[in-house]
Image (cartoon, rainbow, N blue to C red; front, top):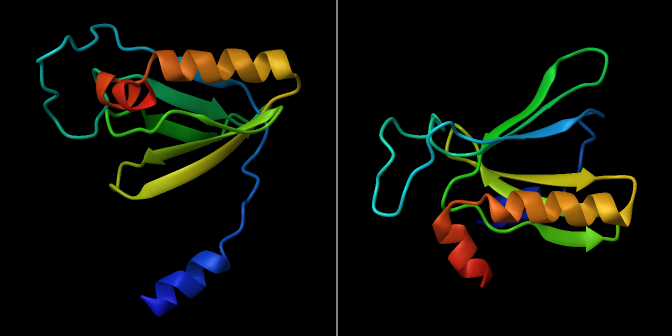
Length: 123
């Protein structure tokens, strides 16, 4: 445990790149009471996808699962998002935008499309 705590203290944010963030919605969303087959494939859950501008390299492709916590505002133009990646490891992202209005719109869009378990925790 001490090694993990020490390692956590030295963890730094690394800029992955600049690009357009897309919120991809499933074609057939789950209704209450349905279960998702196939693990974390994300076939029926929303996904956040981002590619580096002008290069096209994929830098974010994560599923918004029921365990996803609502987006947390860090500053006027940045927010933190904690997700579980495809290897079932927690992953934290800091998203920055240019204006306060864009930050509000992005936070609201992501939070409004979180699967029901996370939205209940938000209320």
